[in-house]
Length: 234
Image 1 (cartoon, one colour):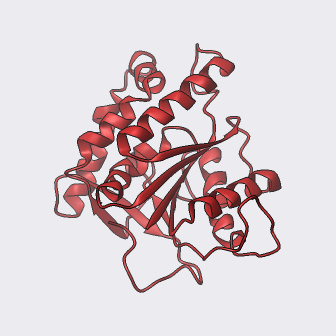
Image 2 (tube, rainbow, N blue to C red):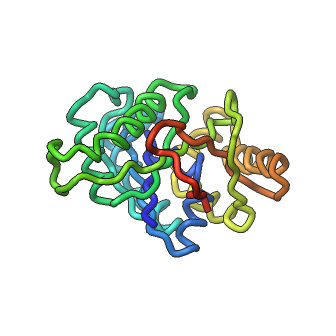
Protein backbone atom coordinates (compact mmCIF):
# COMPACT_ATOMS: atom_id res chain seq x y z
CA UNK A 1 0.00 0.00 0.00
CA UNK A 2 1.16 3.55 -0.74
CA UNK A 3 0.63 5.99 2.13
CA UNK A 4 0.72 9.76 1.59
CA UNK A 5 0.91 12.19 4.49
CA UNK A 6 0.04 15.78 3.52
CA UNK A 7 1.09 18.22 6.20
CA UNK A 8 1.46 21.95 6.24
CA UNK A 9 4.89 22.58 7.79
CA UNK A 10 7.97 20.34 7.75
CA UNK A 11 7.36 18.88 11.24
CA UNK A 12 3.56 18.58 11.29
CA UNK A 13 3.32 14.99 10.06
CA UNK A 14 5.96 13.80 12.51
CA UNK A 15 3.97 15.39 15.34
CA UNK A 16 0.51 14.22 14.30
CA UNK A 17 1.12 10.80 12.79
CA UNK A 18 4.86 10.03 12.88
CA UNK A 19 4.36 6.84 14.85
CA UNK A 20 1.70 5.59 12.47
CA UNK A 21 3.87 6.36 9.44
CA UNK A 22 6.78 4.47 11.03
CA UNK A 23 4.44 1.54 11.68
CA UNK A 24 3.37 1.52 8.04
CA UNK A 25 7.02 1.35 6.99
CA UNK A 26 7.70 -1.51 9.40
CA UNK A 27 4.79 -3.41 7.86
CA UNK A 28 6.32 -3.03 4.39
CA UNK A 29 4.23 -0.19 2.97
CA UNK A 30 5.66 2.76 0.99
CA UNK A 31 5.32 6.08 2.82
CA UNK A 32 5.58 9.61 1.43
CA UNK A 33 5.66 12.75 3.58
CA UNK A 34 4.62 15.90 1.72
CA UNK A 35 4.73 19.33 3.36
CA UNK A 36 3.02 22.15 1.50
CA UNK A 37 4.64 25.09 3.32
CA UNK A 38 8.39 25.40 3.70
CA UNK A 39 8.42 26.68 7.29
CA UNK A 40 10.39 29.81 6.42
CA UNK A 41 8.69 31.96 9.09
CA UNK A 42 8.98 29.49 11.94
CA UNK A 43 11.68 31.21 13.97
CA UNK A 44 12.10 34.55 15.71
CA UNK A 45 15.82 34.93 14.91
CA UNK A 46 16.78 32.87 11.85
CA UNK A 47 15.94 34.72 8.64
CA UNK A 48 13.35 33.20 6.25
CA UNK A 49 15.73 32.38 3.41
CA UNK A 50 18.15 30.54 5.66
CA UNK A 51 15.38 28.88 7.66
CA UNK A 52 13.74 27.54 4.49
CA UNK A 53 16.92 25.60 3.69
CA UNK A 54 17.39 24.43 7.28
CA UNK A 55 13.85 23.13 7.56
CA UNK A 56 13.99 21.33 4.24
CA UNK A 57 17.13 19.54 5.42
CA UNK A 58 15.49 18.73 8.77
CA UNK A 59 12.43 17.31 6.98
CA UNK A 60 14.59 15.02 4.85
CA UNK A 61 16.47 13.81 7.94
CA UNK A 62 13.22 13.14 9.80
CA UNK A 63 11.73 11.26 6.85
CA UNK A 64 14.88 9.13 6.68
CA UNK A 65 14.42 8.17 10.35
CA UNK A 66 10.86 7.06 9.62
CA UNK A 67 11.84 5.41 6.34
CA UNK A 68 9.74 7.68 4.14
CA UNK A 69 10.31 9.90 1.11
CA UNK A 70 10.18 13.65 1.80
CA UNK A 71 8.41 15.94 -0.69
CA UNK A 72 8.08 19.73 -0.49
CA UNK A 73 5.76 22.02 -2.44
CA UNK A 74 7.85 24.96 -1.15
CA UNK A 75 4.98 27.38 -0.47
CA UNK A 76 5.89 30.19 1.94
CA UNK A 77 4.42 30.19 5.44
CA UNK A 78 1.06 32.00 5.75
CA UNK A 79 0.54 31.54 1.99
CA UNK A 80 -1.25 28.17 1.59
CA UNK A 81 -4.68 28.77 0.07
CA UNK A 82 -7.18 26.05 -0.76
CA UNK A 83 -8.32 28.15 -3.73
CA UNK A 84 -4.81 28.31 -5.26
CA UNK A 85 -5.15 26.33 -8.51
CA UNK A 86 -1.39 26.04 -9.02
CA UNK A 87 -0.87 24.49 -5.59
CA UNK A 88 -3.93 22.27 -6.01
CA UNK A 89 -2.65 20.95 -9.34
CA UNK A 90 0.84 20.40 -7.89
CA UNK A 91 -0.65 18.43 -5.01
CA UNK A 92 -2.82 16.45 -7.44
CA UNK A 93 0.39 15.48 -9.22
CA UNK A 94 1.88 14.32 -5.90
CA UNK A 95 -1.12 12.06 -5.24
CA UNK A 96 -0.79 10.60 -8.73
CA UNK A 97 2.99 10.26 -8.47
CA UNK A 98 2.75 8.39 -5.17
CA UNK A 99 -0.27 6.34 -6.31
CA UNK A 100 -1.65 7.03 -2.85
CA UNK A 101 -4.00 4.41 -1.44
CA UNK A 102 -4.62 6.57 1.64
CA UNK A 103 -4.07 10.22 2.56
CA UNK A 104 -3.43 11.46 6.11
CA UNK A 105 -3.71 15.19 6.72
CA UNK A 106 -4.72 17.91 9.20
CA UNK A 107 -8.08 18.14 10.90
CA UNK A 108 -10.33 20.74 9.19
CA UNK A 109 -10.49 22.73 12.44
CA UNK A 110 -7.03 23.38 13.84
CA UNK A 111 -5.13 26.05 15.72
CA UNK A 112 -3.94 27.97 12.64
CA UNK A 113 -5.26 28.83 9.21
CA UNK A 114 -2.33 27.29 7.29
CA UNK A 115 -3.23 23.85 8.67
CA UNK A 116 -6.91 24.28 7.82
CA UNK A 117 -6.14 25.37 4.26
CA UNK A 118 -3.91 22.33 3.71
CA UNK A 119 -6.63 20.07 5.09
CA UNK A 120 -9.04 21.54 2.56
CA UNK A 121 -6.49 21.08 -0.22
CA UNK A 122 -5.99 17.41 0.72
CA UNK A 123 -9.73 16.79 0.67
CA UNK A 124 -9.98 18.53 -2.70
CA UNK A 125 -7.18 16.58 -4.39
CA UNK A 126 -8.64 13.28 -3.18
CA UNK A 127 -11.30 14.12 -5.79
CA UNK A 128 -9.35 16.00 -8.48
CA UNK A 129 -6.90 13.10 -8.83
CA UNK A 130 -9.72 11.15 -10.54
CA UNK A 131 -10.48 13.75 -13.23
CA UNK A 132 -9.04 12.54 -16.58
CA UNK A 133 -8.85 15.95 -18.22
CA UNK A 134 -7.01 17.58 -15.32
CA UNK A 135 -3.59 17.05 -16.83
CA UNK A 136 -0.48 16.74 -14.67
CA UNK A 137 2.97 15.27 -15.28
CA UNK A 138 1.82 11.83 -14.16
CA UNK A 139 -0.95 10.86 -16.56
CA UNK A 140 -4.15 9.01 -15.95
CA UNK A 141 -6.87 9.39 -13.33
CA UNK A 142 -6.35 7.81 -9.95
CA UNK A 143 -8.66 6.27 -7.41
CA UNK A 144 -10.61 8.09 -4.71
CA UNK A 145 -8.19 7.58 -1.79
CA UNK A 146 -9.71 7.58 1.68
CA UNK A 147 -8.66 10.57 3.80
CA UNK A 148 -7.91 10.45 7.51
CA UNK A 149 -7.49 13.48 9.75
CA UNK A 150 -4.67 13.30 12.30
CA UNK A 151 -4.87 14.67 15.83
CA UNK A 152 -4.72 18.37 16.59
CA UNK A 153 -1.95 19.81 18.74
CA UNK A 154 -2.66 18.80 22.35
CA UNK A 155 -5.76 17.00 21.09
CA UNK A 156 -7.95 20.07 21.52
CA UNK A 157 -11.39 19.86 19.87
CA UNK A 158 -10.55 16.42 18.45
CA UNK A 159 -12.34 13.20 19.36
CA UNK A 160 -10.71 10.23 17.61
CA UNK A 161 -12.85 7.56 16.01
CA UNK A 162 -9.84 5.30 15.34
CA UNK A 163 -6.57 4.72 17.17
CA UNK A 164 -3.19 3.30 16.19
CA UNK A 165 -1.03 1.67 18.84
CA UNK A 166 2.42 3.26 18.48
CA UNK A 167 3.96 1.83 21.64
CA UNK A 168 6.76 0.21 19.65
CA UNK A 169 7.20 3.31 17.47
CA UNK A 170 7.13 6.11 20.06
CA UNK A 171 10.91 6.43 20.35
CA UNK A 172 11.34 6.51 16.57
CA UNK A 173 8.63 9.17 16.38
CA UNK A 174 10.44 11.31 18.96
CA UNK A 175 13.73 10.76 17.15
CA UNK A 176 12.15 12.04 13.94
CA UNK A 177 10.76 15.11 15.72
CA UNK A 178 14.21 15.72 17.23
CA UNK A 179 15.54 16.13 13.68
CA UNK A 180 13.62 19.42 13.58
CA UNK A 181 16.22 21.04 15.78
CA UNK A 182 15.39 24.60 14.71
CA UNK A 183 11.92 24.14 16.22
CA UNK A 184 12.60 21.91 19.23
CA UNK A 185 15.50 24.03 20.52
CA UNK A 186 13.76 27.33 19.85
CA UNK A 187 10.61 26.24 21.69
CA UNK A 188 12.65 25.20 24.71
CA UNK A 189 14.68 28.40 24.80
CA UNK A 190 11.99 30.87 23.72
CA UNK A 191 8.74 29.36 25.04
CA UNK A 192 10.15 27.15 27.84
CA UNK A 193 8.36 24.14 26.30
CA UNK A 194 9.95 20.70 26.29
CA UNK A 195 8.28 19.70 23.05
CA UNK A 196 9.39 16.07 23.08
CA UNK A 197 7.86 15.61 26.52
CA UNK A 198 4.76 17.47 25.27
CA UNK A 199 4.28 15.01 22.41
CA UNK A 200 5.05 11.96 24.55
CA UNK A 201 2.38 13.10 27.02
CA UNK A 202 -0.22 13.60 24.27
CA UNK A 203 0.43 10.12 22.84
CA UNK A 204 0.33 8.59 26.32
CA UNK A 205 -3.09 10.17 26.84
CA UNK A 206 -4.38 8.69 23.57
CA UNK A 207 -2.90 5.39 24.73
CA UNK A 208 -4.90 5.58 27.95
CA UNK A 209 -8.03 6.06 25.87
CA UNK A 210 -7.34 3.02 23.71
CA UNK A 211 -5.85 0.56 26.22
CA UNK A 212 -2.21 0.70 25.19
CA UNK A 213 0.89 2.60 26.30
CA UNK A 214 1.07 5.13 23.44
CA UNK A 215 -1.33 5.82 20.58
CA UNK A 216 -2.23 8.29 17.85
CA UNK A 217 -5.83 9.22 17.15
CA UNK A 218 -7.56 9.75 13.79
CA UNK A 219 -10.92 10.58 12.24
CA UNK A 220 -11.96 9.54 8.75
CA UNK A 221 -13.21 12.04 6.19
CA UNK A 222 -16.76 10.77 5.77
CA UNK A 223 -17.61 11.47 2.14
CA UNK A 224 -18.64 9.37 -0.84
CA UNK A 225 -16.88 7.46 -2.34
CA UNK A 226 -13.97 7.50 0.10
CA UNK A 227 -15.61 5.06 2.54
CA UNK A 228 -14.48 1.44 2.32
CA UNK A 229 -15.38 -1.75 4.25
CA UNK A 230 -11.81 -2.33 5.41
CA UNK A 231 -9.31 -0.81 7.83
CA UNK A 232 -6.63 1.32 6.19
CA UNK A 233 -4.80 2.37 9.35
CA UNK A 234 -2.13 -0.09 10.60
